[in-house]
Image 1: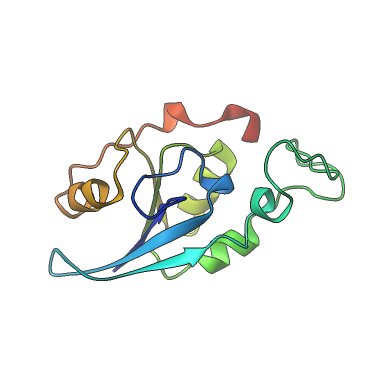
Image 2: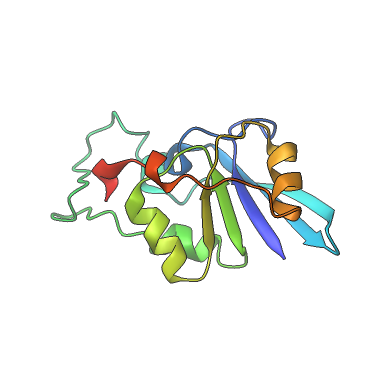
Length: 135
């Protein structure tokens, strides 16, 4: 199984899934990490348009030209069973669940600790910490 952890530096978990610089992809077999790679984030709208502050007709309410569809990120992470971040919009949280990718909004800050907790079924998930303006 593979899991994706949003991270800007491959050590700490990113504060926001959609604005992360990339994803640590951990492949797990028999409760052990067998490989880790880093996938640069070129597929979320925030990453493509320079983040939250960049207007570029970006629209969170689902109307208009850029209606924030998540097909690209869902496709890019489709081989992962779970994604971990310190924050994400509730719309992507629900979209991940709809394609059988389990999202985690965790308070854990370290990538390796989060992976270990995930493997041992101890990773917290706090959907209430999600960004509702992305719902």
